[in-house]
Each structure stands twice: as C-alpha cells, then as structure tokens.
Length: 198
Image (cartoon, rainbow, N blue to C red):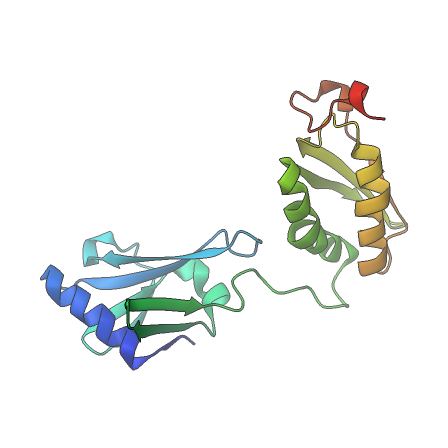
C-alpha cells in the first residue's frame, strides 16, 4: 500500500528517538485530496493525538499512522529520504492524491465535474476566479456559475465561449453547450470591470 524506504525509516527513527516520547509515531494524511491543490501532511503523533480510525503501518522502530479518509488517495505512495552533500531531503510521491479521472463509462456529470475542477478552475485561479457546475441537463447542456474575479468580469462571455465551452466540448463527449447562470451585475470584485471590457 505505502512503500517506505529504509533510508526514510531510518530518518524517522532518528527524529523520534531524539524526541524521547514513548509511543511517538508519524501520521500521514492527504490534504485537499482529489483536487489540484492536493498535498500531504506529515507530522509526529502521540497515541493521544490519534482519532482511532487510522491505519497502522509497522515500520522498523515506530508506527506510521495513515489517516483513514486519506487511504484511497495515498495508496501506492512512496516515501524516501535522499542524503545529499548539503543535507537530506524527504520525498513523498503519491500518484493518486489528486484523484483519478473518471472512466469513459462514468456519468456525464462526473466527467464534467472532473474537468472543471482539474483543468478549468486551476486556470481561472490566476484571475482569482472559479466556476461551479450548477446543472448538467439531460441534453448535455452544462450550466455554470462564475465566482471570485470571474463574477462580474467583462471577459466572462469570452472565457465561457472560447475557453470553458471549447474545453468541455472537446474533452467530455456528450456536452452539447455551456451556459452561464451568473448574475454578473452583483459581482463585487471582477477581474476586469464590465464597463472596461472592450
């Protein structure tokens, strides 16, 4: 499930021995799992810090506690410690942490949500914006709501037609159109004000 190299185990063991607390282990959890912002959190944990549903992985001289809700995202993860001339570096590779793209057989809604969260929203974030899927109709029309810097932005129509709609229609078979259900007049901090858009 998780591969912890000998060098990583030795590194953790030395740190734990230095602390001198009985039962001290290491807890690993996925943070923002299933999203482009996914990351891992690694911390010391005493028995009293545990929730009780963690998975225990016995290592040489300590226990690695795996957060129960993180198991599917950290399955297949590798933890290694590489010694370099300037010191050492802990490396954690977790190929499933950002989630896995739904299969072609998944519902249209699942496939649309995946592309919106994994590709479209990370691009819109550079303009402090985002979109949320409000609905996917039976005939393949995706209805979105713009938020953040995209809410009230004078370029929202261009973003919708030339960016979002093209992306969804090319990457998600079954999408026939994309519509905007946002009341852009109520946007409080648009990236480009509507009266400034050319």
